[in-house]
Image (cartoon, rainbow, N blue to C red):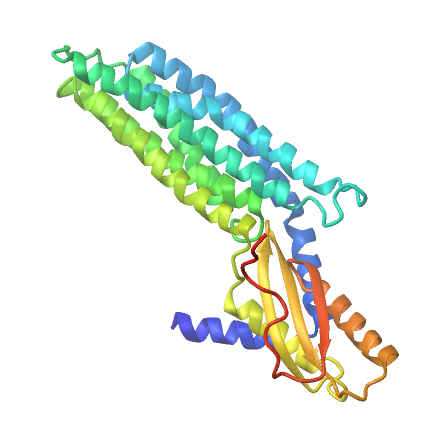
Length: 329
């Protein structure tokens, strides 16, 4: 069923003109702009408040598991500020200093965010292992206010997680925030359980839970780091986007464009770079070839998420690829 739904979506996109796709993307962006701002600033304000609640819960209970959730909560607003500053920096472009724009700065901000959260996990693991190695401690006193504070944090993160759900695949900032809220649900939920277990069942459940929580934090954020790094390195776009670019190139001036030799679509940060080699008759005048290639470039750059498009004109398809993948310096 998923395959046919995806095929129908692809066909629908192919039937739309580039102008229609651009207008749809613009309407969607305008409609979502307020929701995106709410997601970003609600997360920031909530993280400041929740860091205070988590600090109270950790200090009043003395639970290492709640100290783990507290450390994660304290880093959250700092990381949110990092994301906001990176996003604003990406919007302010100096053409002389950054000819290709600064959109990748947003992805770099996401990577810094992830490493900050992973650093929290490393610190907590060290403290938890030290606590486990001491051995023989008595169970800590069960503190109801601390558990209530942690539960309030869990409920708030659940609300933010659900709010960001519908926007996570459209905006890089919101995707990272959604992942942060998802991870916090896991961290806070397990933190409450291991904290209560350490107070009611056995002392070692609390520090052991802190180790599990911290390792979970590092694994989850490492996966995000790998994804963001792939965008910076230049991973290929989804095959549906490559099909769309090919279709647009073939349909553009079909009386003069006789074929498409090469299509490359790959990420450069959160946006896409497009390279297309089109084939024309070897008798085509330079002025005509230039005008067709330039108009195709403008059309491709009008597609949603495309930052730059480069169009190369060929007169045959028997040659080797123009660019080497590996170069000896």
